[in-house]
Length: 94
Image 1 (cartoon, rainbow, N blue to C red):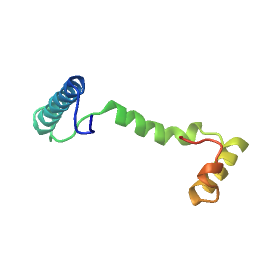
Image 2 (cartoon, rainbow, N blue to C red):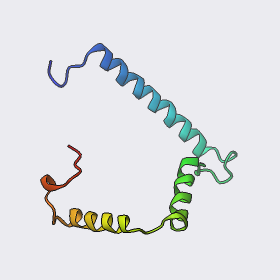
Image 3 (tube, helix red, strand yellow):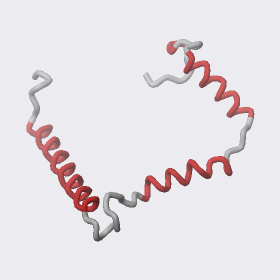
Image 4 (cartoon, rainbow, N blue to C red):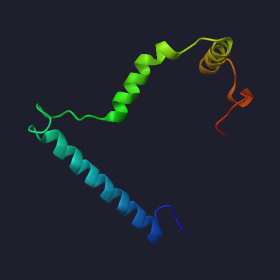
């Protein structure tokens, strides 16, 4: 079976995902283009986005620098600048 051939189950899953995307896109367009629901229109309230932004702002209040975080930052700097080869890293994705 080549990479372009799909089984009936794979085709069904792809069609379900495409249909779900189409429904979500239609709902998004409906909400963003209706000026009577959101005042000016075009802006949606996404609770996940606002929760993430609140977490980023309040991180300073809850973060405590310790020797562990300083060590981690130093290691991360070495990884990002290429001082440690990927094969020599302790934790890898592979």
